Image (cartoon, rainbow, N blue to C red; front, side, top):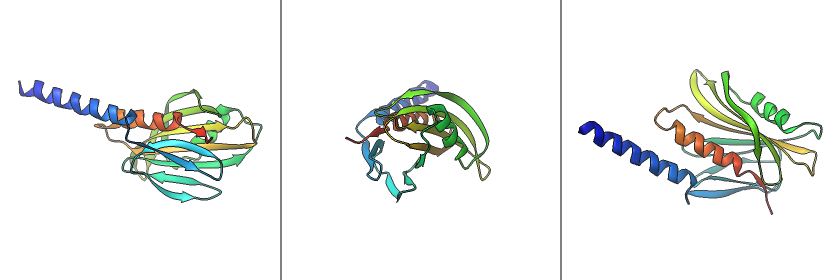
Length: 167
């Protein structure tokens, strides 16, 4: 009977965390220099906001966006650039596919790797601006935590898919 109670408690916790991933605990982040907006969990702090990089982080994630000029790339090429920008070793790709974004053409790569010997998970996004020669590589990194990986992956995807041109 104790085991059943633990299963219920874990299921309730996972439901709560999943709800929070898509609930009202999100804030809009804006990189004014390039007119980009995306959702981040409430409590994220902007660490860098320059012409060359935008970085914000919170308890579980670090989000880094870098611009580059190359109008010849396709979305999957841009995602491969984001993947190559990761500061990780022993990387394995779990998912690579095109995504719909608001005002951008996007391609995501999800996987795992290591940083300083510690396992991490990542989401990389290549975002092509069809109206400009400036494109973006986006990386989201978070440490491997088997108890929270599913929720963290869902949140990372939500962040990537919220990437949009500011209106």
